[in-house]
Amino acid sequence: MAKPASASPSWFVRRDIDGFFGLAIDNIVQVLLIVGLCQGVLGFESDLVYGRILPGVALSLILGNVYYSWLAYRQGQREQRDDLTALPYGINTVSLFAYVFLVMLPVKLDAVASGIAPLQASEIAWQAGLVACLGSGLIELAGAWIGNRLRQLAPRAAMLSTLGGIALTFIAIGFLLRTFANPIVGLVPLGVILLTYFGRVDFGLPGGLLSVLLGVALAWTTGLVRWDPEVFEQAMQPLGFYIPKLWIGAIWEQGDVLGRYFSIILPMGLFNLVGSLQNLESAEAAGDRYPTAPCLAANGIGTLLAAVCGSCFPTTIYIGHPGWKDMGARVGYSWLNGLVMSILCLSGALGVITYLVPIDAGMAIVLWIGIVIVAQSFTATPVAHAPAVVVGLLPGIAAWGALIAKNSMRAVGAGTPEQPFQPEVLVANFKLSDTFIEGAFALEQGVILSAMILAAITVYIIEQQFGLAALWAMGAAILAWVGLIHSFAWTPADTVVSLGWGTGTEWAVSYLLLAILFVLAAWFNKRKKQNKVI
Image 1 (tube, rainbow, N blue to C red):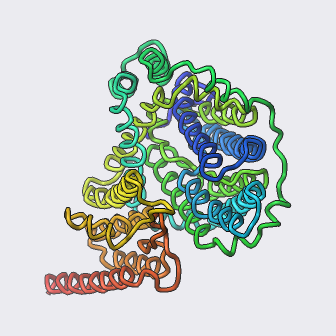
Image 2: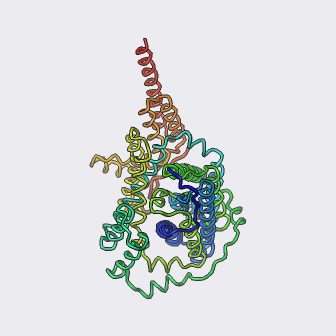
Image 3: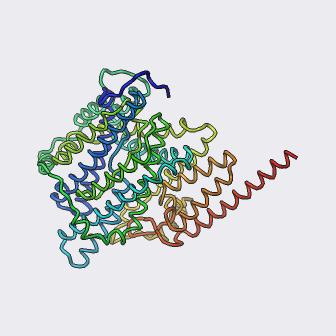
């Protein structure tokens, strides 16, 4: 990428407004999930959510966003560039769900079953979440010392296609379905985004801002959102000022959670680590190279700060840097997002904002970012590696299909304590329609790692470096053997990762046989070349 002569970065440019709306909407969705799951699933009191958890979220978000803004500004000064885009940063969605359903909810249910009052059980579950978050932060921080080496070992197609699979399914398709569920509200803002960033049409206002304004107007005028004094009064109740506090004692009281739930905390920490590496690779492919170790360390420190200040949810570098860069966002969108999100979290004003500005009004920006990420998987890798990109997309699609299948079963009443999942019946019924759903469940577990491995193997096959393909297959065999990829177990309402020695035997053996095949291929290829020389 050509560098402008003597260019210097700015702390804020006009297009940062668009980037801010995209990142803020994404962050607001995460915080809404935190509030909804903590109150609806875990039964936490409002004081616990707004007085302890959200202040911790606020500190972690402001720390990370300010750091990445400063890093982009400093990097721009060093490289004499004004076109660097700060790395997006926020709450890790996968860890959010994992720690609610696989750590905090079991801890609360165990406490209630042992005779502890629900209010005290909620306190214990919150403390367990802090410990899980702390463990994830320690893993992310430790990854700062090995992350750069891992980036050197993994082909770009393996890194980017993995992100592409997640962006295509969990970001793009989800918001596309919501767009066509409410087309009058959703399609016009999407049209504005496509015209602004693909068609280069200048409407006189930043495209993201215009899209959100039109979405809000359409949502209110069409009746998607209606004025309800009772709902508005409920949204106003948490308003106040919440001072963050240190909760180190609460972590100490539940320290044994780290050992009891290590099988959940370890994969989540590794997931955050690998995901951050892939996002750094994505940023470099878009023209912005950032140092690996400081970025991973910042992620770890942000997560540790969240834990000691009351938040149970790890932070990470977000997917989507190329989208924000193409949007024209630079440094300012990041620090502005951190400032606004921290004010919303510390003031309890989030409920009012989300009532007045529905998610439907801004989802077009996030949908566009998903499209750009998938496109980058193909455009920023060698043309010959396109098959590897496709292979890397497939596990993400399978994982999304697994999620939809389980949600469908829950929608008809299965997956409850009264009617738990019946694996034999469900798998057999899916096979009647030629759907091998257990394969989707296997790909769902460790989807980030398995997608990267399969794409890397395909790259090295294309390059006829069969020995390296064999090494990646051996690595997959080890991960499968201990259950970090593919191995899953049924619960009454879900399929979850199954860690343990030998839990993924059949997948481990399969990868081992694949490695042997690659070694044989390398031998045959070498003999063929020798015969040609003779």
